[in-house]
Amino acid sequence: MKLLYHRLGELALGLSLLVLVGAFGGFRLVSRYLAEQNPIVPDSLTGEYDSGDTRATFHGHFADSTEVYPGRLARVLGENSGPKRIEVDLTNQKVYAFEGNQKIYEFLVSTGKWYPTPTGTFTIWGKFRYTKMSGGNPTLGTYYYLPNVPYVMFFGNSKISASRGFSLHGTYWHNNFGRPMSHGCVNMRTEDAEVLFYWSQPTVGEKNGTRAEANNPGTEVRIYGETPKN
Image (cartoon, rainbow, N blue to C red; front, side, top):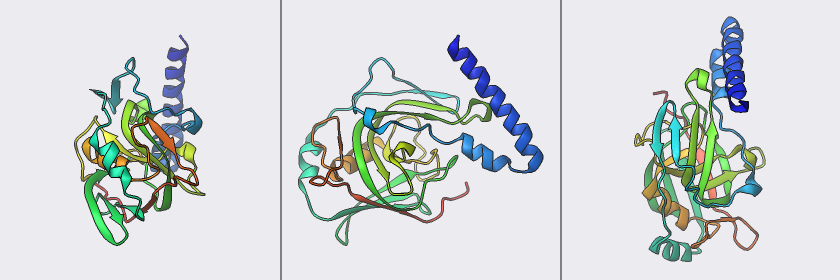
């Protein structure tokens, strides 16, 4: 019953805002606000797979998560301790991984379409093998519920707090990489995210998750460019 009331409340809120903002010409602004990811609680993250919650919904489409297992990459990629950085190129929908001035990896990604991916310089503050994400609004057709998102690398800075939940991560609910598809995060093919997850810092090894510390700092993430309009 509580869930029903909650859904009815969301519907009423969405309709009220559509009427209000449509009248004043601010529809796009409020649509973007209602598409934002729900806040996360950083201290509650465990990185564990939830086998009792595997059905995802993304804008009315459904998909099922599958469990991934740490393998050779967990033991090999994390061993390199040279200076690393990640660059996210919004214009070309790509992510690059550097060790010094040498580009080590280049992958296609999908950045924010319904809510913008922030630009600037960030640091990875935590990495978790699985995380649940949700947000959007059913009335506007932007609702999503994504359990067990794999290989999540959360980033932030002094302006973008950890609770905002921005991250690079694997993706099992779409395969449209190279085009904007997200609500602000950087969507990657799961196999590509796995490589970046174990290559980047803080080093996680075979654990389900870790948080950056002074003796295990996070990799710098630079995000720049302009997301394509379509």
